[in-house]
Amino acid sequence: MNYSSLVGSTISTTTLTTNRAQPSTLQTGTAQVSTLTTSTLGVGTGTGAYQMDVRGTAYLSSIQAPVDLLAQGLNLRPSTVNSSTIIASLTKMVRRVTPVAGTLPFWASGTTFGTAPAGSPPANAFIGGLLLPDGRVLLIPYLSTTLGIFTPATNAYINGPSVSGSYQGAVLLPDGRAIVIPYNSTLLGIFHPVTNAYTTLSVTGGFAGGVLLSDGRVFLVPGNGSNAGLYTPNASTGSFTTGPAATGYSSGVLLPDGRVIMVPGAATSVGIYDPISNTVTSGPSATGYYGGVLLPDGRVLFVPFIGTSILIYTPDATIGSLTVGPSATGYHGGALLPDGRVLLIPRSAANVGLYTPNATTGTFTTGPAATGYIGGVLLPDGRVVFVPFGASTVGLLHSNTPASKSMCLHPFFNKF
Image 1: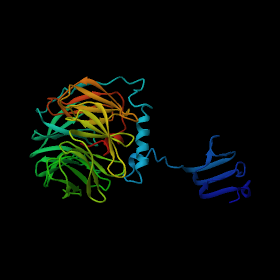
Image 2 (image 1 turned 180 degrees about the horizontal axis):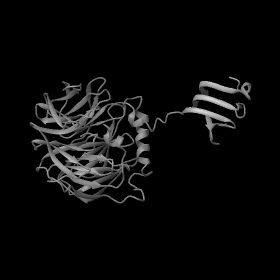
Image 3 (image 1 turned 120 degrees about the vertical axis):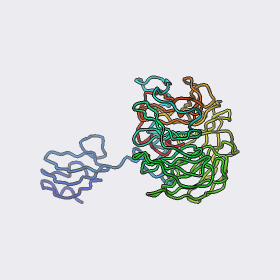
Image 4 (image 1 turned 45 degrees about the vertical axis):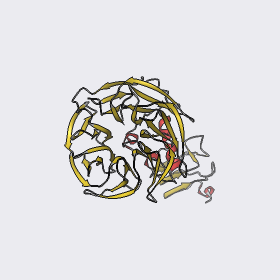
């Protein structure tokens, strides 16, 4: 289009797409445009590839600029195609807080630990927790006969609906319901936060945590059973199918490419579940790890409980590789903090663990005294809820560094 032919005229159009307009060739007293789509055109700035000099009156109902895919990374469906963009988005997310992992903003204090004063769960009650969309935290019953519900706004704990058997971990569905994973029970649980109702579905097997897959199903990690499980939700109770043969895993981590990494507890190697082929592949040798945390660069931290060192798993197109990190033991579960560090939850250890990642093995330090917890739940206000197992009260770690709600609720992190 020859813009010089428009000198002195009035433009009336629904959409004006301007990719390669030259300076001073588009001169008009009145531009009436419903939508102005800009890519290389600099509007009102001297830094664009081209400048727009508006000397008359321009009427714009909207401006459509290129989408920042990195800002939208957490909204993308985990897949091989989207993996690199998601990882770049995760890195950008933590660098908004601090450019170097572990370096707190000047206005943030160090971590402090306390316990919730209102209400107390029974001893050895829960394994894992889940942040609900309404801000409450669901505590998953192991020896408790009820679900636990902790309200961070009031620091109050109450007993939820009754359950039958032992459970480990939970997964948040896109519609806000929580799937409670059966460990030693024949009933998968479904908690409805809006009504506080609890329904069940008969299943077979024993599982240790779960992961929301990119197609909306829930992968149940094989713990003390002989197979993985797959739950397909619908408007009522959904359906269950038995998955590939596997056993001895303690939890799962969703990768940006859509696969699931299964953390070896009693198993002797890393497990890799591919939802497209519905297969489990054995990865590098390891055992004694209870919990995994996705790092912003796409690697996975394995939490050492029986193991004596942190392990860092680096995925690739096949089975990936393991790097031995700093010495640590006695932890069960972890949480990625907004500044990029990883919080390790002390089950038998005497102190909170803090891991700072780098390009190689990272570093490890101990934090405040605490013990008897399994699993941690990051809140948008920057606190982390410690789920009581041997401890008699809910624990709270204060980081004074807020997190985005999308990070806290995302299936990469909000699961056990």
